[in-house]
Length: 280
Image 1: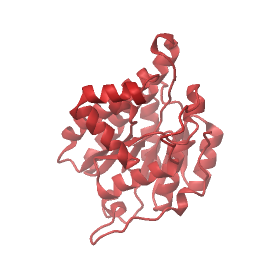
Image 2: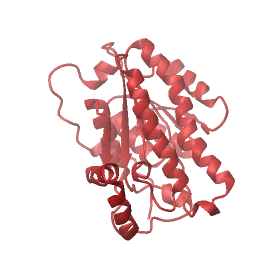
Image 3: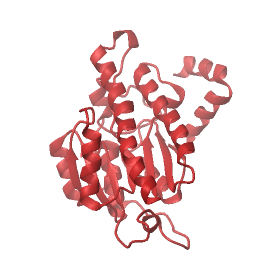
Image 4: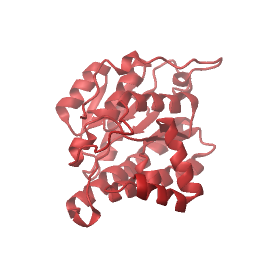
Protein backbone atom coordinates (compact mmCIF):
# COMPACT_ATOMS: atom_id res chain seq x y z
CA UNK A 1 0.00 0.00 0.00
CA UNK A 2 2.92 2.30 0.58
CA UNK A 3 4.56 4.17 -2.20
CA UNK A 4 7.25 6.76 -2.63
CA UNK A 5 5.94 10.31 -3.08
CA UNK A 6 5.61 11.60 -6.59
CA UNK A 7 8.22 14.13 -7.51
CA UNK A 8 5.71 16.76 -8.64
CA UNK A 9 3.22 16.49 -5.81
CA UNK A 10 5.01 18.66 -3.26
CA UNK A 11 5.39 21.46 -5.77
CA UNK A 12 1.63 21.95 -6.03
CA UNK A 13 0.91 22.82 -2.39
CA UNK A 14 0.00 26.39 -1.57
CA UNK A 15 2.42 28.74 0.17
CA UNK A 16 1.28 30.15 3.55
CA UNK A 17 0.35 33.82 3.59
CA UNK A 18 3.19 36.01 4.84
CA UNK A 19 2.70 39.11 6.92
CA UNK A 20 4.83 42.24 6.93
CA UNK A 21 8.54 42.00 7.72
CA UNK A 22 11.25 39.66 6.52
CA UNK A 23 10.17 36.30 5.13
CA UNK A 24 11.50 33.15 6.83
CA UNK A 25 14.13 32.64 4.15
CA UNK A 26 15.49 36.16 4.66
CA UNK A 27 15.62 35.73 8.43
CA UNK A 28 17.37 32.37 8.27
CA UNK A 29 19.88 33.60 5.70
CA UNK A 30 20.67 36.63 7.85
CA UNK A 31 19.35 39.04 5.24
CA UNK A 32 22.35 38.35 2.99
CA UNK A 33 20.20 37.99 -0.12
CA UNK A 34 21.38 34.44 -0.75
CA UNK A 35 19.02 31.48 -0.42
CA UNK A 36 19.27 29.80 2.98
CA UNK A 37 20.61 26.24 3.08
CA UNK A 38 18.80 23.21 4.46
CA UNK A 39 20.23 19.77 5.17
CA UNK A 40 17.56 17.06 4.89
CA UNK A 41 18.27 13.48 5.99
CA UNK A 42 16.23 10.50 4.89
CA UNK A 43 15.68 12.38 1.63
CA UNK A 44 15.78 9.46 -0.80
CA UNK A 45 12.04 8.73 -0.35
CA UNK A 46 8.97 9.29 1.80
CA UNK A 47 8.81 12.26 4.15
CA UNK A 48 12.38 13.38 3.48
CA UNK A 49 11.84 13.51 -0.27
CA UNK A 50 8.58 15.42 0.15
CA UNK A 51 10.33 17.92 2.44
CA UNK A 52 13.06 18.39 -0.15
CA UNK A 53 10.50 19.17 -2.86
CA UNK A 54 8.65 21.62 -0.60
CA UNK A 55 11.78 23.50 0.43
CA UNK A 56 12.99 23.59 -3.16
CA UNK A 57 9.68 25.13 -4.21
CA UNK A 58 10.20 27.79 -1.53
CA UNK A 59 13.58 28.71 -2.98
CA UNK A 60 15.89 26.98 -0.54
CA UNK A 61 19.32 25.60 -1.36
CA UNK A 62 19.46 21.93 -0.37
CA UNK A 63 21.95 19.32 0.75
CA UNK A 64 20.27 15.91 0.80
CA UNK A 65 21.32 12.75 2.59
CA UNK A 66 20.00 9.21 2.24
CA UNK A 67 21.16 5.60 2.00
CA UNK A 68 19.61 4.77 -1.39
CA UNK A 69 22.07 6.34 -3.80
CA UNK A 70 19.95 6.02 -6.96
CA UNK A 71 16.76 7.40 -5.38
CA UNK A 72 18.65 10.17 -3.62
CA UNK A 73 20.25 11.24 -6.89
CA UNK A 74 16.81 11.34 -8.53
CA UNK A 75 15.40 13.56 -5.78
CA UNK A 76 18.48 15.78 -5.94
CA UNK A 77 18.08 16.26 -9.71
CA UNK A 78 14.41 17.20 -9.32
CA UNK A 79 15.13 19.66 -6.50
CA UNK A 80 18.39 21.07 -7.90
CA UNK A 81 20.16 19.92 -4.74
CA UNK A 82 23.58 18.70 -3.71
CA UNK A 83 23.48 15.17 -2.37
CA UNK A 84 25.58 13.17 0.06
CA UNK A 85 24.63 9.49 -0.06
CA UNK A 86 25.68 7.79 3.17
CA UNK A 87 24.50 5.65 6.07
CA UNK A 88 24.38 7.92 9.12
CA UNK A 89 25.35 4.98 11.32
CA UNK A 90 28.87 4.95 9.89
CA UNK A 91 31.25 6.36 12.55
CA UNK A 92 32.17 9.97 11.86
CA UNK A 93 29.78 10.37 8.93
CA UNK A 94 27.91 13.19 10.69
CA UNK A 95 31.10 15.26 10.67
CA UNK A 96 31.67 14.58 6.98
CA UNK A 97 28.06 15.49 6.09
CA UNK A 98 28.25 18.74 8.05
CA UNK A 99 31.57 19.67 6.45
CA UNK A 100 30.18 18.83 2.99
CA UNK A 101 27.18 21.12 3.58
CA UNK A 102 29.36 23.96 4.83
CA UNK A 103 31.74 23.57 1.90
CA UNK A 104 28.81 23.67 -0.52
CA UNK A 105 27.14 26.81 0.79
CA UNK A 106 29.08 28.33 3.68
CA UNK A 107 26.32 27.84 6.24
CA UNK A 108 23.62 25.47 7.44
CA UNK A 109 20.44 27.38 8.24
CA UNK A 110 18.07 24.43 8.68
CA UNK A 111 18.44 20.77 9.54
CA UNK A 112 15.46 18.48 8.94
CA UNK A 113 16.34 15.20 10.66
CA UNK A 114 14.10 12.75 8.83
CA UNK A 115 16.19 9.57 8.59
CA UNK A 116 14.53 6.64 10.34
CA UNK A 117 13.80 2.92 10.28
CA UNK A 118 11.26 0.71 12.02
CA UNK A 119 10.68 -2.88 13.03
CA UNK A 120 7.29 -4.49 13.68
CA UNK A 121 6.60 -7.40 16.00
CA UNK A 122 6.73 -8.48 19.64
CA UNK A 123 9.73 -7.13 21.49
CA UNK A 124 10.83 -10.55 22.75
CA UNK A 125 11.16 -11.73 19.15
CA UNK A 126 13.13 -8.72 17.94
CA UNK A 127 16.59 -9.68 16.61
CA UNK A 128 19.43 -7.88 18.43
CA UNK A 129 20.64 -6.50 15.10
CA UNK A 130 17.25 -4.88 14.43
CA UNK A 131 17.13 -3.42 17.95
CA UNK A 132 20.55 -1.86 17.45
CA UNK A 133 19.67 -0.49 14.00
CA UNK A 134 16.49 1.23 15.20
CA UNK A 135 18.22 2.88 18.16
CA UNK A 136 21.28 3.83 16.11
CA UNK A 137 19.34 5.27 13.16
CA UNK A 138 16.33 6.87 14.83
CA UNK A 139 18.05 8.24 17.91
CA UNK A 140 21.85 8.22 18.05
CA UNK A 141 22.50 9.23 14.43
CA UNK A 142 20.09 12.15 14.86
CA UNK A 143 21.75 13.31 18.09
CA UNK A 144 25.23 13.07 16.60
CA UNK A 145 24.27 15.12 13.55
CA UNK A 146 22.47 17.77 15.61
CA UNK A 147 25.56 18.04 17.82
CA UNK A 148 27.65 18.82 14.73
CA UNK A 149 25.26 21.35 13.21
CA UNK A 150 24.15 23.35 16.25
CA UNK A 151 27.49 25.04 17.02
CA UNK A 152 27.61 26.49 13.49
CA UNK A 153 24.06 27.80 13.85
CA UNK A 154 24.78 29.32 17.26
CA UNK A 155 27.92 30.98 15.92
CA UNK A 156 25.99 32.60 13.06
CA UNK A 157 23.16 33.55 15.43
CA UNK A 158 20.34 31.90 13.50
CA UNK A 159 18.98 28.56 12.33
CA UNK A 160 16.39 25.89 13.04
CA UNK A 161 16.41 22.18 13.80
CA UNK A 162 13.34 20.17 12.78
CA UNK A 163 13.11 16.71 14.34
CA UNK A 164 10.74 14.30 12.62
CA UNK A 165 9.18 12.30 15.44
CA UNK A 166 6.21 9.97 15.58
CA UNK A 167 2.99 9.63 17.51
CA UNK A 168 4.48 6.28 18.60
CA UNK A 169 6.97 8.29 20.62
CA UNK A 170 4.19 10.17 22.40
CA UNK A 171 1.74 7.41 23.30
CA UNK A 172 3.57 4.14 22.54
CA UNK A 173 2.36 1.69 19.91
CA UNK A 174 1.89 -2.05 20.32
CA UNK A 175 4.33 -4.07 18.24
CA UNK A 176 6.74 -1.13 17.94
CA UNK A 177 8.27 -0.99 21.41
CA UNK A 178 11.82 -0.05 20.42
CA UNK A 179 10.72 2.37 17.70
CA UNK A 180 8.38 4.01 20.23
CA UNK A 181 11.23 4.26 22.73
CA UNK A 182 13.59 5.83 20.20
CA UNK A 183 11.04 8.42 19.09
CA UNK A 184 10.10 9.20 22.71
CA UNK A 185 13.77 9.90 23.37
CA UNK A 186 13.89 12.21 20.33
CA UNK A 187 10.87 14.07 21.71
CA UNK A 188 12.41 14.61 25.15
CA UNK A 189 15.79 15.47 23.65
CA UNK A 190 14.11 18.17 21.57
CA UNK A 191 12.44 19.69 24.62
CA UNK A 192 15.69 19.78 26.58
CA UNK A 193 17.76 21.18 23.71
CA UNK A 194 15.18 23.88 23.04
CA UNK A 195 15.78 25.24 26.55
CA UNK A 196 19.54 25.27 25.94
CA UNK A 197 19.13 27.16 22.68
CA UNK A 198 16.93 29.91 24.07
CA UNK A 199 18.42 33.30 23.29
CA UNK A 200 20.84 32.00 20.65
CA UNK A 201 18.68 32.70 17.60
CA UNK A 202 18.39 28.95 16.93
CA UNK A 203 14.95 27.34 17.16
CA UNK A 204 13.85 23.72 17.41
CA UNK A 205 10.66 22.15 16.08
CA UNK A 206 9.21 18.68 16.67
CA UNK A 207 6.94 17.44 13.88
CA UNK A 208 4.83 14.46 15.02
CA UNK A 209 3.25 12.43 12.20
CA UNK A 210 0.82 9.60 12.64
CA UNK A 211 0.54 7.00 9.87
CA UNK A 212 2.15 8.23 6.65
CA UNK A 213 1.87 6.61 3.22
CA UNK A 214 5.56 5.88 2.55
CA UNK A 215 7.77 2.81 2.04
CA UNK A 216 8.37 2.77 5.82
CA UNK A 217 5.92 -0.08 6.45
CA UNK A 218 7.31 -2.27 3.70
CA UNK A 219 10.82 -1.80 5.04
CA UNK A 220 9.91 -2.50 8.66
CA UNK A 221 8.66 -5.95 7.63
CA UNK A 222 4.90 -5.56 8.11
CA UNK A 223 2.21 -3.65 6.23
CA UNK A 224 -0.03 -1.18 8.02
CA UNK A 225 -2.84 -3.42 9.31
CA UNK A 226 -5.75 -1.00 9.86
CA UNK A 227 -8.31 0.70 7.71
CA UNK A 228 -8.46 3.70 10.08
CA UNK A 229 -6.87 6.07 10.66
CA UNK A 230 -5.98 6.25 7.01
CA UNK A 231 -2.36 7.07 6.15
CA UNK A 232 -1.73 10.67 5.16
CA UNK A 233 0.48 11.52 2.16
CA UNK A 234 4.04 12.57 2.97
CA UNK A 235 3.34 15.98 1.47
CA UNK A 236 1.12 16.68 4.50
CA UNK A 237 4.14 16.22 6.73
CA UNK A 238 6.24 18.40 4.42
CA UNK A 239 3.60 21.12 4.79
CA UNK A 240 3.91 20.81 8.57
CA UNK A 241 7.69 21.13 8.35
CA UNK A 242 7.29 24.30 6.30
CA UNK A 243 4.80 25.68 8.83
CA UNK A 244 7.24 24.92 11.64
CA UNK A 245 10.03 26.74 9.80
CA UNK A 246 8.03 29.69 8.48
CA UNK A 247 6.11 30.34 11.71
CA UNK A 248 8.61 29.18 14.30
CA UNK A 249 6.35 26.48 15.75
CA UNK A 250 7.73 24.26 18.52
CA UNK A 251 5.49 21.25 17.83
CA UNK A 252 3.04 20.21 15.12
CA UNK A 253 0.97 17.02 14.90
CA UNK A 254 0.04 15.53 11.51
CA UNK A 255 -2.92 15.24 11.29
CA UNK A 256 -3.82 17.78 13.96
CA UNK A 257 -6.38 15.60 15.75
CA UNK A 258 -3.54 13.41 17.04
CA UNK A 259 -2.90 16.07 19.65
CA UNK A 260 -6.07 14.87 21.45
CA UNK A 261 -4.92 11.31 22.27
CA UNK A 262 -1.54 12.75 23.18
CA UNK A 263 -3.21 15.09 25.68
CA UNK A 264 -5.35 12.29 27.10
CA UNK A 265 -2.23 10.15 27.49
CA UNK A 266 -0.50 12.94 29.39
CA UNK A 267 -3.44 14.08 31.52
CA UNK A 268 -5.13 10.74 32.24
CA UNK A 269 -2.74 7.90 31.42
CA UNK A 270 -4.88 5.24 33.11
CA UNK A 271 -7.88 6.21 30.99
CA UNK A 272 -5.75 6.23 27.88
CA UNK A 273 -4.41 2.74 28.60
CA UNK A 274 -7.90 1.35 29.09
CA UNK A 275 -9.03 2.85 25.79
CA UNK A 276 -5.90 1.62 24.03
CA UNK A 277 -6.44 -1.91 25.31
CA UNK A 278 -9.87 -1.88 23.65
CA UNK A 279 -9.20 0.08 20.46
CA UNK A 280 -5.43 -0.14 20.05
